[in-house]
Length: 93
Image (tube, rainbow, N blue to C red):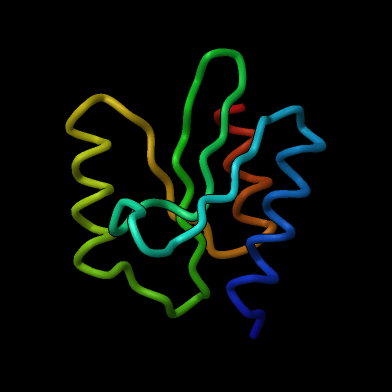
C-alpha cells in the first residue's frame, strides 16, 4: 500500500500537468486545524483536496473543515490514489 505522501506527490504532479495551480498546505503551529492537504485552482474554481490512503479516515477537525467549506459553497474532495484523481479530473476538470 502506498504512503499518503507518495499519493500526494502523484496527485500534485498530475494536477499540475493538467494546468491546475496547486498549493501544498503545511500543518503546523498557527495553521487552520483540519485544513486540506492541497488547495487547487483552475479557471476560477478553488478545490480543497484531502489525501488519504485506502483505509485512511478524516479526523474530527478534517470533517469540520470539510463541512465548513461545503456549507459556504466550496468544493472539497478526498482522494485515495492517482487513478482516483485522474477519474475525478476527467469528470470535473
